[in-house]
Image (cartoon, rainbow, N blue to C red; front, side, top):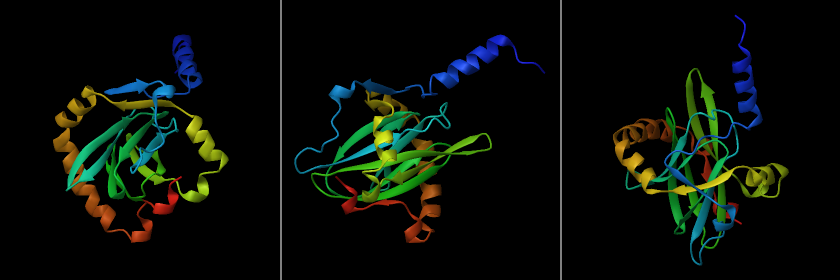
Length: 197
């Protein structure tokens, strides 16, 4: 079957545009209005999704508080968000067609980084959280990740979306957290105190 010229032009336009994901239920933030340095006495985690793989599918990131997912933000392809929180121990979850997790131990006055990484399956997009460890912070790859993508932040639409979908989100948390905890602790992704800068 021959492809129509219109389809080929559309496909090329998508490829040349870098396949950035559409921002849904989040607000785009100009770079000069973004803070990546933590407030005094607090910590900050920057979630980045520099990959274009699975660009049509959004991934949502949650902080787990007392067994309840709380929305951090929705991260489309080539988007990133900055999240402020108290120092301490945390559990984060990323949701697509399934859920995956990353723990973190955060120090005051430090910024930490994590990648939202797509894992494509047959007709499904799954996502994982990959901690950026101290040894990677000076790498060329890290600099490229930092330079890629638009900043986004939560909006009232973000919380409306999370509330409307909380039953499904909670169900994925319960199902996949048990799988994650069954792994050897060294196989569970974690941000360590020393990973901050």
